Every structure is written in C-alpha cells, then in structure tokens.
Image (cartoon, rainbow, N blue to C red; front, side, top):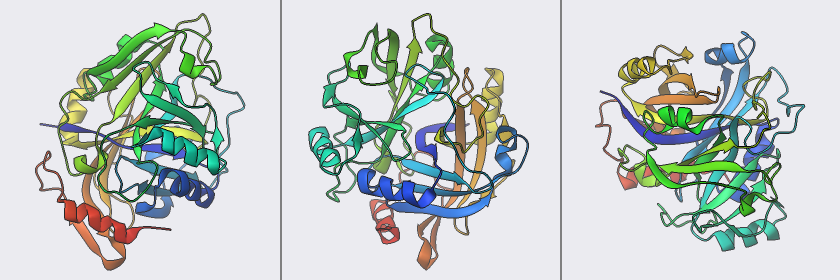
Length: 352
C-alpha cells in the first residue's frame, strides 16, 4: 500500500540564496529551516545536461501554518531567468499560493513594506479575497485566505498553500493530479476572461481554470501544520501556443522548479504510477541524506506537460538540529500526526 499525504513543499530556484531567504522570512514568515546545506544533486542529472551540479538548498517553513518551501540556489552555475517572458497559461508552475488569516491585513503589510504588488485586493472566482505580488526574483505569488493556523506568531501570512500550474489539457492533467495524487475535490471550474488576472501577463485572454483540493486528506505527520492545500490547473483557450517554462533550461534556474509531495510506500506508488504512464524519471533508489539529520527517499515524475513533481518519503527529520534532537518517522503510522509539542519545538531552530 502507498499513501499520498499531500503537498509537502514548493521548490523555487533563486540566483542568490541569502537574499531570497531573507525576503521569504520578511514577507512569508518562512524562518524555520529543516535543512540548509550545500551538496551535489546527482538525482537531477537528466535535468542539468547530464552533469552533476552542486546547489545550496534550504527547506524552510512558517510555524504559523502551511507547507514548506525549498529554496534552491545552484553553485556550479549562475541561475538565470529565461530569455522569453512567460505568461498565464504557459506550461509549468506559474504562481505560488501563500496562506493568510487576514488577506486585507497582509496586503497592507506588503504595501507598507514596499513589496512589488502586482494587483490590488481582488476576488477569486469563488469570491475569496486575494492579491498578487512578485518576490525578489520576480516570481509571482498569490495570497489566499485560510481559517487554519497552527500557532499564532503575529505573522500576516502563513506558509505555502499550493500553486497554479499551466497545462495543455486539463482532462489529461486530472488523471495525475486528481486520480493519483488525490486532489479530487473541485472548488471551482470555470472558463472565461478573469477580472482578477487583468494585471498579470497574458491575463486578458480566455482560460479554463479549475481549483482542486483534497476531499479526504490522508493525514500524516505534518497535517496539523500544513492544513488545507490547493492545486489550480490553467488551460489557455485561445489560439496561442503556450510555452514550456523550463524548456531548454536547467533545473535550478530562476522559477518554480518543482512541486513536492509527502508520500509513504515509494515502491508501491512507483508501481501504480507505471501503470498509468507516470513512471519515475529519476530515483535515489535508497535513503538520501540531506545534512546530518535529514534522511529521505526522493523520486521525480513529470505531469503530461513536463512539469516536475517530486515525491518524498521521509525517514528522519530534525526537530532541534543544533541539539541533535531528531525524529525517526519510518515506523510511524502514515496517517498519524506528530504531537503538537514536537512540532512547536521547531521554533528553537528559527532564523531571524
């Protein structure tokens, strides 16, 4: 048996690691690192011209709630933007979702602190308050509402809530995201010219847009922290041929490099994915150490348009790394959440 517990993190490629993380701490409250190390990335050779690159990567989260973010900065080459300018509907991850208990308050904070706001306060198709902002690299993020918070640290935002992904055929993409990965509940599914996209590149066209969440979340160690998560699939309905965001580029170049899922039962999941045409494109084959206190098994698959999905089975994670306090989760029941006191102990790893 295998279990797909849900979104674990969103990976973002950056050119300067320290600057990017400082911005994410200030605006997204992502100040708890699970790991922050420089190492080789042989797993990604097929996405880096068959050369093993090194990179600094930090898995960071906001203890107020939400999923993590992996900040990836290549050290053997300079991460760069694509030569082409992308727009809504292009194939790949275009927008990251960030949670907020009070979207209006978050908007005021971002404005007061001179973030590069792309829109004012607007409404999503289902009536949620939202706004768009660019990070220090120029990547688009969308702040969306949540009622869930794990702790109250006085932040205006929580962590990652998911992302928006451009696809060429929503029906084909649903075979992976809904049928296999478990995002089977439709929040909205509509086709039109969307007013909330009027300030985004290409946002004046007609699109089909479907927002998915999990109808029956399986739980898992971090379910109390992550809360609800979403995947939005976007299909351009015009005659324009969408571009592939990472075509001809290296993994680690500036942008959203992958979407990561927390899973249990990698071997069985791999067999199920093979049967439906989404087999592993790369696989660590066994336990991968990411620093002294993090041990995982990682694989990658591609959605029908080549967007990278990372699958992670966690065996060991740090709770208070500087004190050598770690948690072996391999023998825990897949749906059993970690104790609140253990999750809250992560605050001792906070980076200011």
